[in-house]
Image (cartoon, rainbow, N blue to C red):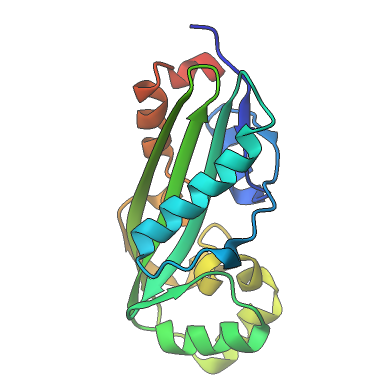
Length: 196
């Protein structure tokens, strides 16, 4: 089977970098989907729905391509956290999360417009936060990094200093489970090595 172009329906530099790290150089096509219109409180259904909507919007522009849509949220203490809306919100979140554990969910939707097939899955990774003081939290928020990330942290950046451990897929916490993507490509009849 010939290998179609790989489209990333996300503006996330972290997701693009993960793909490039494993030899997939995607065409980036942001969906601009308005996430606020989705009112789902179950974290699994939420990330799968958002990933699917993003992928579907972008897939409408391609006839012979693979389109990957992803979305991540942090579920902490029964509350769903996306990107913080302000530095103050990020500080409050970190004050609540420090020394505790949350669940990072990422939805993955892979649409093959060539075969007219679509797969939607999720992965969950447990994240254990360090007990850091208010001064460190405020300094971290001032870097601006947490304002761009679900759960107010980037494990692949400065935030990695404040994560004690994780249980589950590491790349999932960055925004894309590479082992899951491998499985999804196989399920559609592709080998990841075909994209190298």
